[in-house]
Image (cartoon, rainbow, N blue to C red; front, side, top):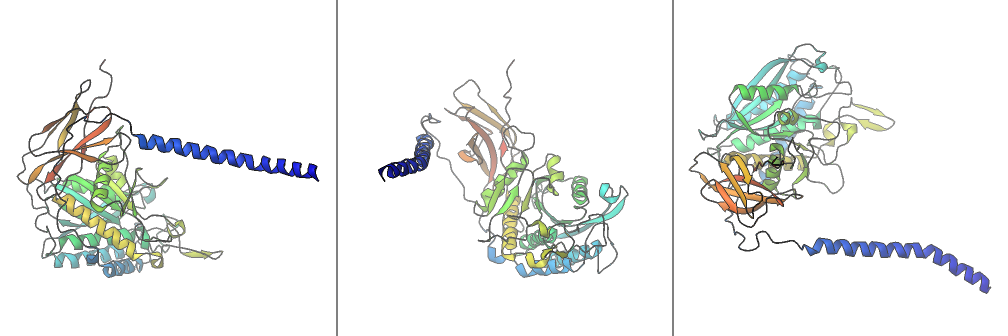
Length: 470
């Protein structure tokens, strides 16, 4: 019996000892990591007399969530789905089925909003011919619909902020225009968000209606599923009109939020461009939107798009312009790019019943508020440069035209590993600053303009030749 007990004890120790050692390792590792995180034993920058910057409040008159008209968004999507398909290769002449049916539904709703805007909103139907592999390399006709709210500032009215969704749809075979393709989420949802933003921002009683400094364009475009053709045309059109694109907000697949605990945050995708510091114009636009709408509303995704996927913002991004994509939190691929059907008890197809209008309304509000503040802001500074290497101070300089509505400039900084900017100082006058006792090597820096109304431009990171001096 004693021998049996000893054997049993040895077996128990053999089993328990690895677990005890693992727990001790985890505990020690946690303590070490916590010590590393909490120590923060780095030199202060600056070592003394850190600035206490003047921070203006954001513009008043933020759009309340209750102002979003979910019923009109639902009605527009129902009418788009009723077109059967909106494949860009389908009929543009049939009023009941095809791409032309989709265009007509969009146009009808935009014209209602334009009428209510008391003539401020201008409507354009942009017809064009285009070619791609997904048109069998043959020219085909397509159309985009734009609603334009002109800016009031002569110096900034040619700066254009765009929100866009694509009204074309597709089935499992993108080349077959005869298959049903309801496209409720992809992308009637994005079209509904774009057009609801047009309503929210063009209303006569809307705060700032007559004071949007930049021009706003609310777009519903075709040809996305055939290779981003409508987006390429929209960029070409903007250049033809003499606009400079201040930002492009693509809303694509923003209608579903099926995971438990909804509503969740919308994902905001942005690419880093060719910048070593991940400070491309698109990334700065994404940061600005998150700062305006809050982290509780926006989930930053520091990649250009979902893996193996693309959207209309890509055309603008590749042109070096600030462009981002809004997309729902988790996608259900049974309800994207699928011909409606049921197989083995699983239902496929992009139908109305899978949409979440509470979530979609949140997306509309967040887009509208971001556009409102961006269109109220001064022009971003230019030629933002960093110098002061091999010296105790960081030196920033920039250029910017005179602007009586500008309060000054915020100087921003962040650790090289941090995703977001913090305000270091505020410069009411001048176009340079010396950050005494701040290393040029431990932080990244940027400058943005601030209006007297509290609206901020997108940040412009410093350029600095970090290459060897020989």
